[in-house]
Amino acid sequence: MDPVSMVFYAVVCGGLAATAPSFQSRPARLVVGTITGIIAAALLPLLRRTFGI
View 1 (tube, rainbow, N blue to C red):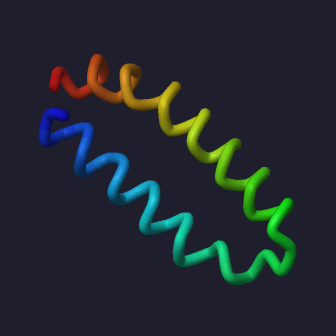
View 2 (cartoon, helix red, strand yellow):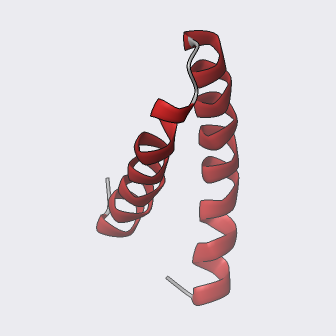
């Protein structure tokens, strides 16, 4: 994995970990994590093109 991807996903996962305890049920955390992962995976190529990385 290249450094840009690693840092991007670390930031996304860190943000998710910081907010996950506020969701009490496991299914809610699973849904939020899945949606966050899909959005992050979709945004990274766009951000790379936008910033020329």
